[in-house]
Amino acid sequence: MNEQLHHVIKSIDERQEELLNLLKTLIRFETPSPPARNTKEAQDFIAGYLKELDFSIDQWDVYPNDPNVVGVLKGSSSEQYKSLIINGHIDVAEVDNHSNWEKSPFDPFIRDGRMYGRGTADMKGGLAGALFAVKLLKEAGLTLPGDLTFQSVIGEEVGEAGTLQCCERGYTADYAVVVDTSELHIQGQGGVITGWITIKSPQTYHDATRRKMIHAGGGLHGASAIEKMTKMIQGLQELERHWAVTKSYPGFPAGMNTINPAVIEGGRHAAFIADECRLWVTVHFYPNENHDEVAKEVEDHLLQLAKADPWLREHPPTFKWGGTSMIEERGEIFPSLDIDPDHSGTKALAAAHENVLSESPKIGMSPTVTDGGWLGDAGIPTVIYGPGDLENAHAVNESVSIKELIQFTKVLTSFIYNWCHTEK
Ligand SMILES: [Zn+2]
Image 1 (cartoon, rainbow, N blue to C red):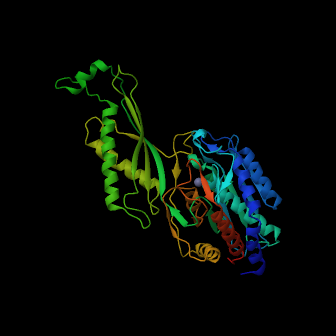
Image 2: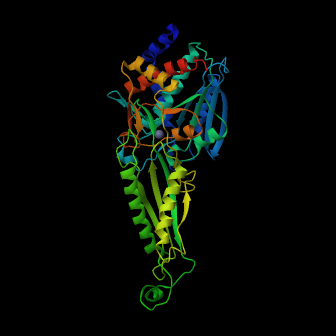
Image 3: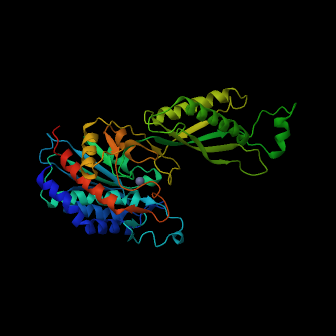
């Protein structure tokens, strides 16, 4: 290893107080989502931090008071050397009830080698480690020939388009690391798409017409949208079972590709036959599947089913898939992320991990979803790699191991340096 880099990595142990203070600062910015629209101060802080390290800053509102920050540190020989995106989200999981917490979730403290506070594991720990890594390289005068892009995005917890907008604005690189919760495993992920299935009757009938609608000789060709939705729910269960039996993917237990009927809304009043029913579903799929295809499979199945019902045949269900916010649109998409263990970036990250921890990293699949899918969707080879574990993410008294945070910072420092010194 480069002598100077070796020195920088060693210095992280002596300077861990600085790293921990940086994480504390990030935790103190209260950025839970929902309610969201509260990240401006935190993002200003990160923009300022990066600016001092000579990054050029692009900051824009995704929503009012929820800006994205993208910092670009132009390499000295961009054309010849590999570029890197580091991506992390500044929002944290919501806090239901502060009183369940030992201390305020936004008042971080350290005990027995762990730091406690909302976002320590998911994922301000990853952000702090990554920011500190960049700072150390800069301070040591280790300039990078390849471009380094740092994305601090909003809205990940509620499926908002923070990372998607970075991709749409054209930010790209030869490799990306999403420093979200992964316990220092190198991971891809399955995907999630939510959707609304609606059954709607063109006529609204009074409750008193029900006899005519359901009994011999009644002569009224109508239906309760709620009752018809039960057929759709059964159909979804059949499809879910079919998928569980026929689809699989290495790194996932069988049957991870579930279809959850999560929310149902319907009917207007007890004096009417329900003329509309809406079902909100959450569909999980494997890394080798695409959210559009999966949504199409669900639609095809339910439309076939509808054809076998005399009323649904004429009033088939309609579908609305995805959305860019669980808060604004009651819908989200997390594209899946396939990873290639043989990609040169993944190999370089694994090598950096091995150097610091003296063991090779576990490479596999995250049981949850992150923004990594958007970067992958944009054609950027991407992995998830960050400190913290999922038992702590979103949990009461969330915490992160300080040892793991330091290891992460060392690995990332080494990886950034080496990858941005790799010739294209
Ligand atoms: Zn996260």
